[in-house]
Image 1 (cartoon, rainbow, N blue to C red):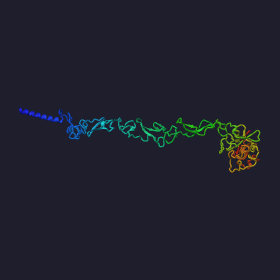
Image 2: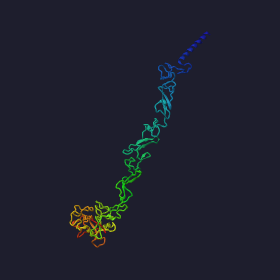
Image 3: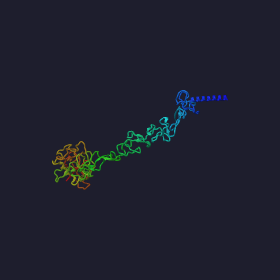
Image 4: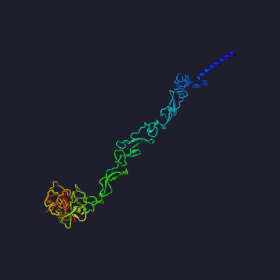
Length: 474
């Protein structure tokens, strides 16, 4: 019995020794604790907080794992990453433990790691179902946190805008407008429809609105002459320009010369001087330069100058044959027969007619009753006869010396010979023959006298470039 008691006492002492030994190791009351149980010490060789040096660490960075304070590889175990009990849990991601640090393994669908910071996981939510190249649509298509123009990956479509060199479109910028897509920022004046430059300009504004290198080319009347609603000399002329009040139309700009004249007395000049819409109508006596013939009673007036067409000029004889004019420094009316000359004088109005041969002789001799308009002696080159070095008709009054003395009546000697109303036969029209007076540029000195013994004659239908006429008035 005494031996049994001694054995039990010895066993009891041995158990107490083991208990004391476990107490010193840190596990006092939990036989299943492997790390940090009831006040683990951080002294050398005991469990630390991940990073103590020396000895096998329990719960610290244990690259070999297994024998530390927890049975885990803290270098790769997501539940004990870097230290025992440090569970890797990242927002929006499946985590992994790499070299004792929690990192992102994969992001959940629709979640992305944009900032590269694993501590906040896959922090960016992107709603694009299938990420792809960045587009201009208001979405982050490549899910990098940058949208449309903010993303340097955005590539504008080629040739989207018109940028024709040398036109207003040359420096056009392409813009991304989010969900509205791409657009072109064209400068003012460029005509655009639904974002694209028009093919045809609709505005007359001095701008190449369709950027084709031409300005307002669809307004084909630009620059052409125009006029107002005036008539005759009162009509104002101008040029077609763009209408500044309505860019869709053009207008007649009357500020260009020539300016309209004011209505005045009608003159024998082929123009509507009194602005009534009629040319050379109701011509007053003042429209014809005439003088009295000396020795006539009652007084007969004679034209100062050989008759001319209304539109005659210094260089052309004109084509209007409505009425015979009497004007200086224009080519005389030639090439017409007697009926034409007769009608041209009568068209002036009552009392106007062709002169008789006797009337023209008196007018040529003048008040001094000389043989030639300028005197009794023939003077070479004074009038336009055959002695002139250059043959041909000259403008009325060109040779100023060939004027009846004391008057302003010119060219009664030479230049063109003139029809008279003096008939030299008894035949009726059209077989009549009429006397001519004064000689022409083809006549020698004797043929240029005011009185000729055998005066020239011509059938009424004769048409010659050296035959003209002048008018008289009772």
